[in-house]
Amino acid sequence: QVKAGEYRIDLIVEGHSHRLAIECDGDHWHGPDRYQQDMQRQRQLERAGWRFVRVRESEFYANPSATIQRIVDACARMGIAPVLLGLTDSTPDG
Image 1: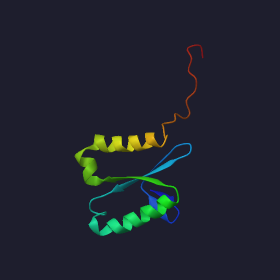
Image 2: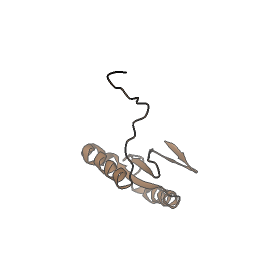
Image 3: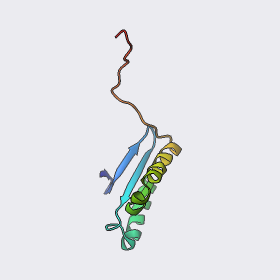
């Protein structure tokens, strides 16, 4: 989890100018009784500039590939792409 103001976000994917918050909603901890509270928290963070993808535990277990693709698609729409850090030029002559 990552601190965002007075809240915590499960996962964050950062690009050069955008951030995507990924919330992993466990079926036990985020049932119908927590929905209003979760959405209020999300709306407050969205007003601060955060974009969200919510992943339900049951959704992930039912179709992990589709769930991950939804996150990848959200990143692509926001212009967030992988960055390779710490790589050096490895030409054959040194």
